[in-house]
Image 1 (cartoon, rainbow, N blue to C red):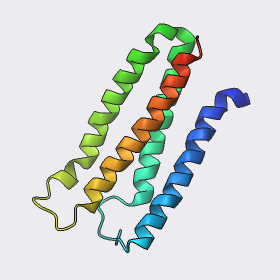
Image 2 (image 1 turned 120 degrees about the vertical axis):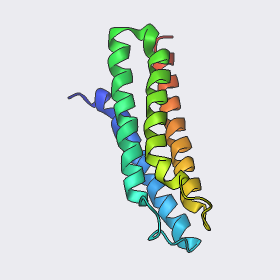
Image 3 (image 1 turned 90 degrees about the vertical axis):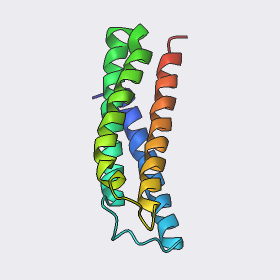
Length: 130
């Protein structure tokens, strides 16, 4: 496998690792207890990393076959990811009124951060044609 095809995935992995370390440091410095979380930080990062890698791969395949459909494919893949994330978040949303909403906020921040990474990747992909 050539390095140019692997670069987006290595970039995603590097950014994810840096964000994970920063996230852990913030939790440590703010004394946030993660033991009561339904999903650990590691599982969430792994989940979002895998979903983003799948979206990257799909977009690269679509780019090779039909460049004009990259944007629509991104919207479809993001919508499917959103439904999947809702199903994962559902147990947290069913808790009537948690004393500490940190876990919910944490999940949404991770979702938005990885969505931003995917969006930037898609923008770069679409701008390559110009």
